[in-house]
Each structure stands twice: as C-alpha cells, then as structure tokens.
Image: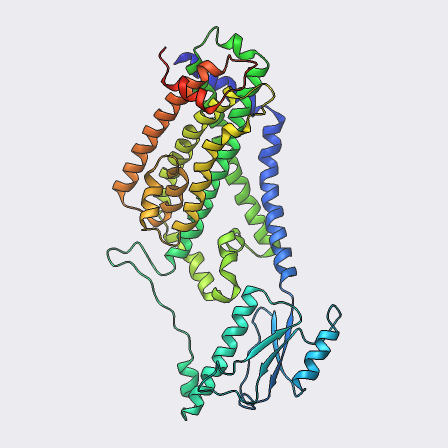
Length: 441
C-alpha cells in the first residue's frame, strides 16, 4: 500500500507541476467564455428577419390581425398585390435584396369549414427554419380558429378568452419534492453533470492510456517493475491521475462560475440561458415567465444529495474506465497504431450519453433504471438522474454494482497489464488479451 501511495504522489505532483496542466486548467474556462460569446453572436446572427406577405383572395381575413414574432424574426404584411405577380417578382429577385421573403396565399375559394381543401399555402423565396415554421403555422391556425368562432356569432371578448393559452402544472402526487417547472430545471442540471462525466472519462482515460504508453515506449516501466508489482503500478497511476482530474475539475467549476458571473455582467445572460437543452426548446416554447420559473426552480433541486453522490459517480466512473484505458495503453505497440483496441471501451461510454439524453424526457422509464444500475453506463446516466431524486434503493444498487464493476475491470486490466506492459515488437489482438485474462499465473 505504501508503494501505491508513493506512485500516486509521484503521478499527482509530476502532472500538476506541468505547464500543460496550468494551461488546460486556464484555457477551459476561457473556451467556455468563448462558447458563451459565440452562442450569443450566432444566436443574434441566426435570427434574421423574415417579412411575409399575406395575399388574401378570399377576403375572409380582412379584419383579422396576424401578430408579428416577439423576437422580431417574423413580420406579417397584408398586401393587395396579385399573387402571380408578387410570386414572379420574388422569384426574379432571388438572391437580391427584396421586400418580402415569402407569401401566405389564401385562395379565393378558401372555406373556414374545410380549411384543408383548398389549403392555405406558404410559398417562400428564403427557406424558413423549424422555429419560424412553427410560429407561422401557429399564427395561421389561430387566425383560422378565430374565423371559425366568428362564424358561430361569438363576440370578440369571448373569442379572446377562448384563445387564451393554458398552462398545466405538473406536480408529483406522492410528495412535495416536485414543484412546477421542476422537471425542466432537473433536466438541464442532469445533462450538464452527465456530459461533465462523459467528457472527463474520455479526457482523463486518454491521459492514463498515453501515460502508460510513454512509460512503456521509454522503457521506464522496466525499471519501475523491478521494485513494484505491475498491479501496484497500475493502481498508483490510475489513482494519481484521477486525483489530478478531480483537482482540475474542481478548479474548472470555480473558474467557470467566475466566468459565468463575468458573462452575466457583460452580456446580461447566464449559463442556463444558453445551455444546449435550453436552446433546443426554442424561443417560441419558452416565454419569459417560464424562464423565470425554471431559474427559480433550480433552488428546489436536491443539491445536498447531488453534492454527495456526484463525486462518487465521477470517481467511480473514472476508476472503472481508467483501469481499462491503462490496459489498452499497455497493450498498444510502440507506435500506438492499435486504435481498434479502444473500440470495446469507447462504445459503452458513447451509449451511456445517448441513454442520458433520452432519460431526461422519461426519468422513470426502464431505460433510465437499467442505464443507471449497469456499471458501464451508470456514472453518466445516474448523474443525469440525480436531480430527479431517484429512489434510495436504486442509488444503493447502482453504487454497489459500480464498485463491483470497478473491482472486475481492475482485475481484468491488471491481468492484461502485467503481461502487455513488458511485451514489445508484437501487435496484440483482443483475442490474445482475452487469453491473458483467464491464463493461470
């Protein structure tokens, strides 16, 4: 144990003192700051203005107002032009500066009772994106529904009341842990933690693999194995680099928090407003009230439980995959050309992030349960589920299997490592590595 501790200290101090550690620690928050800035700039640039001409040959919508988009991306204009003439003008002006980008054509024989026969057409010179399509479609449907109500002789006040949107309050029946807006807040925090572990496993796993390869190719390992056992060397390297990763991860959290505060001062935004999942929701589905509710509900998440369990899954996932990456590094040739050996290890990591992305939409699903207890996927999937407060027995089972998985992968990695680390001049196959696992001493 003393020798393992010495190796841990050596790995930790050596790597923390490197310039690359300082540079990557400082560059990550800078990259995060640039990501936020790019997000703001791209968001501003992508919100181009679309002017839509409404040609109403039916005359039914003469008194109906088509509201423009609040984010100033879509503007409706009722025009008296002939449709054919306007369409020809738009086609001729394609690629040039023009007054309108598209035409909403309402045919003369349009019937409120059967609005799809003939249907209202949207003819464009510039293709609208998915969010703009959704907005335009919603506005046309709202106008048609308003016309239907008017045909039933309903007064305008009643029509306005009937067209008011309602909001459902999704709350848990069995306890008070789930408030309104809880799910959206939990999904954002869960995905951030899931992606953090996913990236860390790849980043630090690759660091372990390269560290083992460097010692093997420089023949330093031959000197080391003369005084320590290969298993002690393996464990010391994994834990030492793991401690480096944990140190760097904590520093990143502190620095990114500082960058977020700085970005909030400069741009008036926060991380949550520009996270991937928020961006996917679109500006049409999340209004300011919902945004405020979502931010307010972040405080209702079980951060105490998350603060205790997230490091466990971070360390557990790192140790489980770190052992396998070390075994691959020992098995690789001197030129490191056997990248195919990484495939069996990287596939479960990639699958786990796909599961995590899906379980935020259905956290109580069977996919979420099995993904959170299988050791090869649980570090990412359970971290994503922690904000949803899964049952304690599910967490206990997940941790137990994660520990068992770590012991199993360490045993397998040690069996491969002890042979492969001193093998030179031969390309090692997965089949050969399998034989080493079950070979007698």
